[in-house]
Image: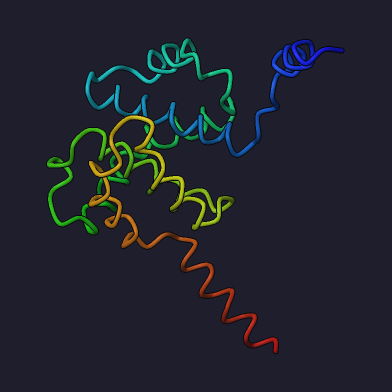
Length: 166
């Protein structure tokens, strides 16, 4: 077998998509969806239909995408209220992309305890890279770190229980 045949065969084999990558693609699509909703006031079902046509949709975790998009869109008022306490400015003063990223991140920190908080923070930090220059959002990322997630309360009570067992 020649070197060209080996290279052609290697290129023909599709690379498996890792679960973390597909969740990352899901987050990127949710970011686009929340941004569309903030900018154009589109209905959620219209946004979902448009995003289903996105070339990256096949790389995303469909179930997680729907769960996250519906969760964030349905919790915007609650998320805005929680963010308002952690921001140094009004939520209305955030750019739509900052607003979308902070809402997605806050939703994962507050409502999805299956995602370790370090993963949620890392994903939030990397999320802007798919749409904007990283420096455009870095100052806003510190705000949600102040956001006290429910998991922090759960972790502190669990730590207290573990220390009592020793």
